[in-house]
Image (cartoon, rainbow, N blue to C red; front, side, top):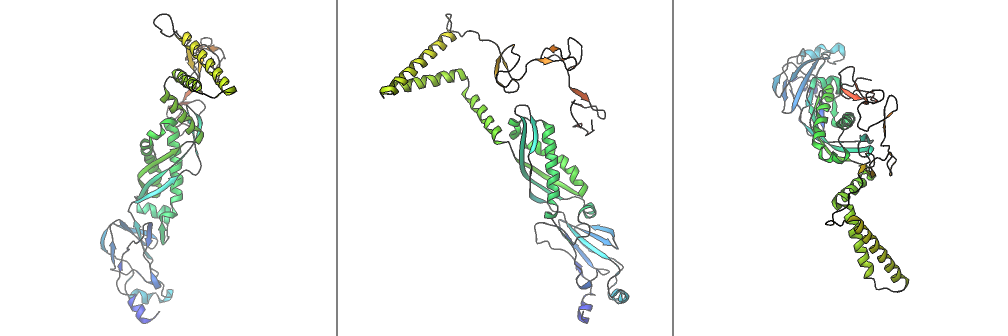
Length: 377
């Protein structure tokens, strides 16, 4: 090091940082060629920045935006000359870290693996979701101690993987506890986002961070479930399926009657038309009555809670999926009414809920953890 560079390095300096990037979170003020932060050096902290002054390994002060004069044990020229026994290396260690406190927006999150969800209509489902969030440094001192330590440079990419894992874990818990039906998920994105953001903030605070915005852009269902939902929508749009089938049969009969082809084709169309007319006439005769054409009362039906198929009232099993309509006592096995709360034979309660020993919340008997306080059952 030449004499000129030595003398140049001993002048009082201005310590500052101009951020030209979009993802830098922490920047340590460089000490080039064993340059030292001198007594009386000027510190300039720009907006959306916080400067942390570390003196001899301890956090000495935190500077908000503004202009400051630093006071250390490092005196110009005299200190460098006194460091000859340390090979001119500064034995008064002073460091300044600039922490970027601006909002880091448009950060992506998404599920690597599907989220398992229990739905009342479709049973077990696999959900995938994605969205965006924005975060910033809330407590620079905690962020320094817990995350970047003594690194000279720290960017968003170095922490986003950890943040994404926390977000996906929290969103999974929120969706599972909310118990929103799969068909209603698309209408609850804002509510899910608000619940998730409150819990994510609690977990981010450990790192000195805070989340300012959290958005659920999409929660996608498996293709088979989406097709089932489309079928239900079509059935709802058609209305009364009995009238729709009659209309379709009448249309088919008309098309067959207009078919002018001869031979076996014409004969088959005629036979089909005749059979269709016969069935329609039979349906109309059986469906009407001699008094004003009002329909005869039909046999009461019971809807299967598993597949939603209609079954005659009093049936013990569903004709479509085999679901049992018979309810038995969980204690003695005696057959009881479907809505009975107590067994008429032994008097045992039919509720499967138990009280959490810690918070008293009502939970399902087969639960392993309390969804309210997390107590292990």
